[in-house]
Length: 108
Length: 239
Image (cartoon, rainbow over all chains, first blue to last red):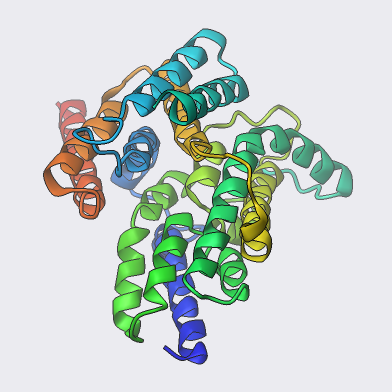
């Protein structure tokens, strides 16, 4: 690719990304009523999306090789337990991440 | 819903309340942004590219993929389709925020433009305190997150070669963020069906189809199951 083609390619990537973000808002602009099933999806999808994002973050872990996903499992377990216990977002995230960093840098 | 007042006081209050929610993302985005800048330079791209993409694309995983794409042949349709596939999950976010972002005025264009995984997760779950303008709160969460990402990408592409601190494992901060948001939502919701679907379907699809192919089938399956459930609830409501 020439430099010009690369800049055009970046513009295409930006446009396609925006399409994925704007699509529902284009289909249902302000003032247009949202049908019942879409309203239901809007209510139900966030919880599913959070689960999906957790799995998405873990997609490159190989259970059969390397550290077998043990540091990730411990990090996630501690993060979730800290959150159930103290309900402090920053504490849970910092606690889980620091533990994970210690595990991958010193133990594994 | 949104107050008409858009004076400086309203904005400052919203910024101050939004900032703490973005702290984990500051850590994650500065780190990942620096990594991204270094990665782009290692592929031989000019320093301007990671900066340009953080401003115009602002979708982390796609920006990494773009680094490789820009080295290949110029195939516009291919590039367009790859981007749609990598970013399909944004459609979930749009459907979820569809009614919420209504009434946020002109700000909603930026709210939608900057709706990355992290800004969506925060804006979808944060309980905006009373007396704080929700539109400006969401706006500053989105803006701060993008600024962290741009700053990281810029630092990485300019000074990446100088960094010598051991940051191995810091990228886990993004996983931890989503685990906390998932857990927090789990504690508050009465019905866990959707949470369980969101874990079980992608996990099964990941094992069956692999890391490069599991996302779109997972999302399609989640939509199908939820719509079937909606149909059942509708029918039982009628009878």
